[in-house]
Length: 153
Image (cartoon, rainbow, N blue to C red):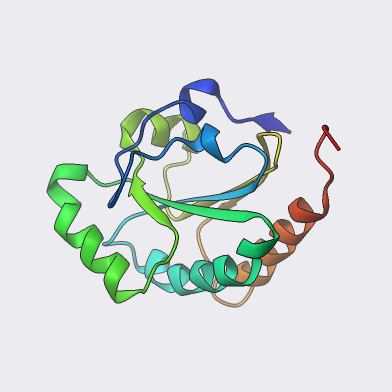
């Protein structure tokens, strides 16, 4: 089990709206980080599932952060439109090349989703999206993470 690298957790990531996103600010919550892009077909299939997951588990302590791997300046309008069209109700921003590379560890296929425990460990990593199997696998991993007691409990 790996811990989220400090360079990833502490990075100030540009957000579509509001203050920059800092993954370390979600400590104590279960975090699902999703790397995606507006041009990615599987990402378009996955996003509605992530919106459903967020609605279902947010009250239990799940936070979802969607990070586009696209260039923030070039894709700003596309990402805003995507968020609107897909009714994304979780935080969305851009990963920037350093954070994307650190999370992907050489596997640059997207989408990639990471389930991160309350104490900052990467519990599960999903690469790609299969509409038949992936939603249940992600839901199970989220449920498992939410059921874990944090070290402080």
